[in-house]
Length: 223
Image 1 (cartoon, one colour):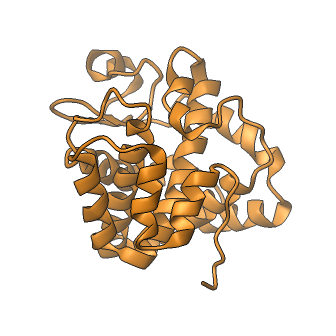
Image 2 (cartoon, rainbow, N blue to C red; image 1 turned 90 degrees about the vertical axis):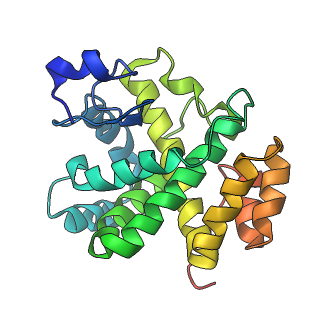
């Protein structure tokens, strides 16, 4: 955990506060990340007043990402489990991020379940926003953060939020078995996005359909 002045000495991304795992450490900022204010400015106007109020209430009045610091760390640590065998495949990045979000949800469920309300409120509000992001195709998830400044990072965060929505559904249905299945996929032969969707549909057909229809999907909360 480092301040903005030390960020360039240890981080692999230039934008301050982009949490990530390096070869020997997880890097996280001490202060609010550079892109956060931009993200709120972009997303907030496209959220209904009811969802905005729900998010503010869950956060205690201030949308501070520091509340999720432990979640971010558990997400990055989960990345250490899937290896790097798929790194050149265009579908590798989103599948690895879905996997890390499953690991994060496992941590929250076991250790910080009291904080799930704030995460849910943020995710639901963000995913409901009417913002039209320039990059939306699932296999292009990596592109926005490559030289596009804070706006690109915000586009990437939108991808992460959508993958958390899918991960939450999969975790609720399959739990640790879903986590293990996706890990087995990621350390095995490279599969296409459609093949990954088919494999996860064994746990829940709606998860498979969400991946195929990305980003145009929703889940019935009662099912």
